[in-house]
Amino acid sequence: MKEQDVCQVNCIDREKVDRVAAQVNEQNTFEAAKIFKALSDETRMKIAYALYVEKELCVCDVASIVNASTATASHHLRLLKNLGLAKYRKEGKLVFYSLIDDHVKQLIHIAFEHQKEMENSG
Image (cartoon, rainbow, N blue to C red; front, side):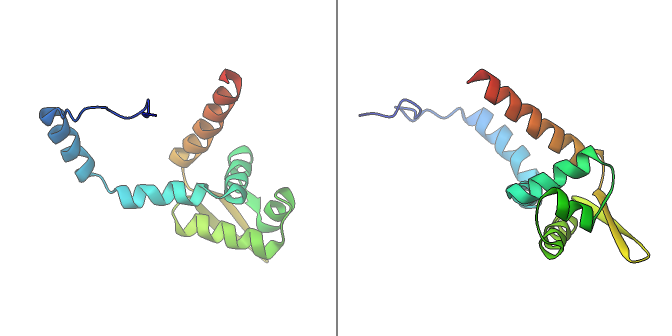
């Protein structure tokens, strides 16, 4: 049985391929992929969404929201920070995390909007 989603002939539009390949090669796809790798974990996505909903949360609050230990929440928050998605500030003995900027907030928002659309369409 032949696959329906694969070209059955090899036909390359060289002009288009060269133009798009040049643009792709100018981008730092490795670094951009890190963003999605960070968000590919369900717990980190929950944490990112919680930080989208509430501007800033302490590590203890995050742990409670995602039903994890403080150590686990801290690990995930540190990873989000190291990959450039979150930042933190220390206030006495508490550490508060927030999303780094509006671009990250938009990614989180768009991901959930798309997911809702997919649920409703199928």
